[in-house]
Image 1 (cartoon, rainbow, N blue to C red):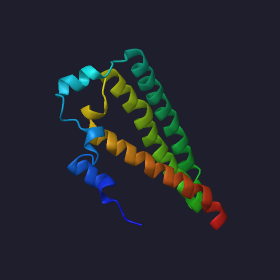
Image 2: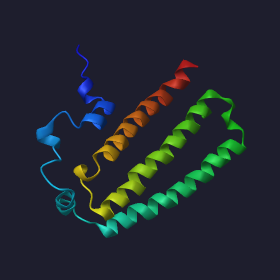
Image 3: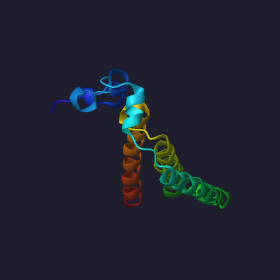
Length: 138
């Protein structure tokens, strides 16, 4: 089985996407790419407001988990770390999505940021699987 390093995140972020016909951003100017996207104010504001409110509520949950000293067991440590990642994920899935919707962004307007956010999502999924199997290992 060959390892395809051209699909690795660092290679893609530094050299551009390995499949230029599908992800070639050089054939238009940045203004043309922004004109390609559509600005969605109501949807963007909805995502921003709900994301910020949910982040505030999540902070209360995380603080209560620390104050009740639940972090003594390994499962709660993983759950706390996963909660931190959920807060970051909420920032990505709601706040950044709202920002990009208001901005009218497409992939070629912010390729490195969008690749980074996608890589973060893959890492979060891996940790969810780890959390699922941790109690069975103990």
